[in-house]
Length: 178
Image (cartoon, rainbow, N blue to C red; front, side, top):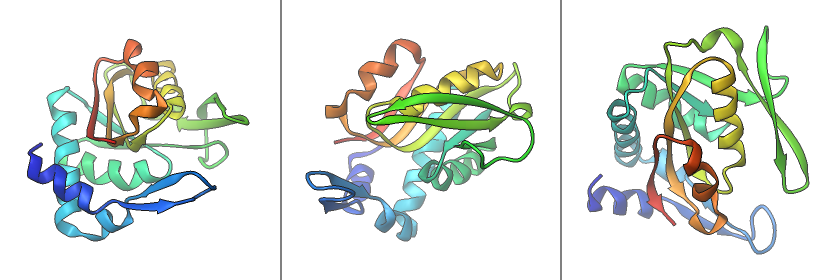
């Protein structure tokens, strides 16, 4: 991705101080999504990552990963699979619990959506601690598919997600490092 494209994306991400709690600066991507040029640049860049790494399907993580993952899958000519919070998918699912700062959470995928022939690229808006991404990749592997990698709009490097995930990933690409 060119420097101009990165500048465009950065210019459309709004900092929201003290959200969702005091001391946190939330990176709001809604202005980027509202700008058709920026959104197109973003989805094209993520689609290129999918193609470059031989993905056959795209997984989007609830919720902003859905917003990014579905158009990325369409651009790359791939299928899209949502990974959702527990209890949101009907039918047979695989689930994976993971630790949060205070407690645990659980995500699910439809069991039949993953096959041994799949190379899955996980798409999300941000890589922070890597907890949700690690759980998603474990879920994909348990479903019998191969993980092609993780591609995100932005990486919050100070939270250590890359160090946590890199030993288990073929590819980890962040369009923006913050």
